[in-house]
Length: 114
Length: 113
Image (tube, one colour):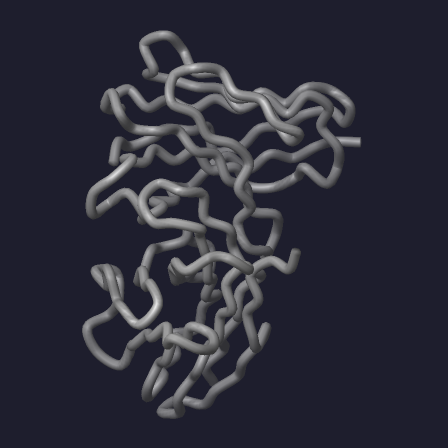
């Protein structure tokens, strides 16, 4: 039973470029969460999505960041016009249902902005 | 969600039990205690969770005090692969904040050969 898949595992972007991070949830899971971990810090919640719906984006920066979870295909976290401060590890998690169900995390995407 | 307090670091000898404490004195009656760990640079791994009764699974045991103000995660026979940062998280069962895992600084457990 495959776990949460994220790709790419490492992504290097120059300032001003766009970054697209993909997340495929575990089989049977329809709830996806994105977290960001800045260097030497804990994980911070960004956004919670169900298929075709954003449920809570209270942790998303107001500008340049967006997320989607289409009916078909993986969830995408998109960062436009990246800046050096966006360099971080971005983790995706999925759960079978919402609420307090256990979240299972992927291996993360490490974004480096040069 | 209630805040949690954990020691910043602990050492444990390989093969011995690792007991990781967590204080959550402001926990509400319906809030769960969750434990996750993060092995260096990897995604967090779910370990166990509980409400008021002690819980055990193949990875660990969770002991919650009767007043629910603190808990202890027990790894019965620690191995070098258990070296990680362990996070104690209190979550509501429902509502807007129930799906946000709030990670604090956790406890860095070092298993010593």
